[in-house]
Image 1 (cartoon, rainbow, N blue to C red):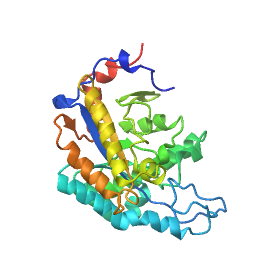
Image 2 (cartoon, helix red, strand yellow):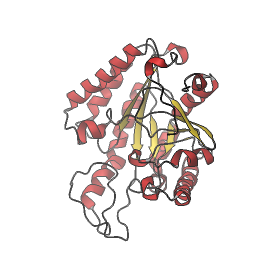
Image 3 (cartoon, helix red, strand yellow):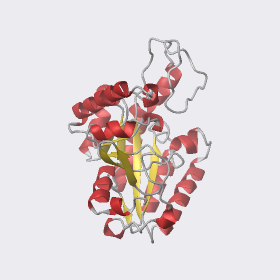
Length: 303
């Protein structure tokens, strides 16, 4: 593995800036699916489907494609309104095709000064398709980063793989191409280092449990149950964060969290966390830079 195993009790306390207990990141995944490919093999769905029966890859799946497009046309703006009204920043991830085909959304995130992570070329084109083919994987990542720079107006600092599907080579390639952090792994509540061939890459763990796919699309929870889950996660991490800081990530997809029935869970959770002191709303790149510059990264490596 590219990282050390360091059990939570064996680490020195992590003290976030300004005495924060929880670093809270709201991640809006702004994704774009190809309609078809020149192959009968079904396209990788890149998330749950509203109509589960897969079609051949060369046959348009208008039901699922337009369900996901709802997030681009309507849902994302509902989510943006929540953060605008609360005065709290969000983070976005962006497929390259989102920047090409849905630039309006990327411009809205940019205008607000929100962080934007590179997130594969297309949502259905996962990096594991290129496992054991590092040259091809590098070319896909490079092409994604080029499209990112064109749409966003600056180089990408970090990466989240579509569907969290990366290869053993991915961290090496990301570091080689100048990125600061990767957010694919699900194994911690604190940042740590990935030791690549080209130097250290910060891992800022993601959460697939506190995520609208898991809560609504796969979990079938009601809006009130989703709100309770978000609060339970936050309350426990806030309690633990008194001794050593924690990360909480809330993963969202505009075609799910942006539905009219679901948005109350986000809105009321944002209102809830605003009543607490000691909550930091960082950009991941800000967290990664802090982690490296303060010496926390060196102090938390295994022996």
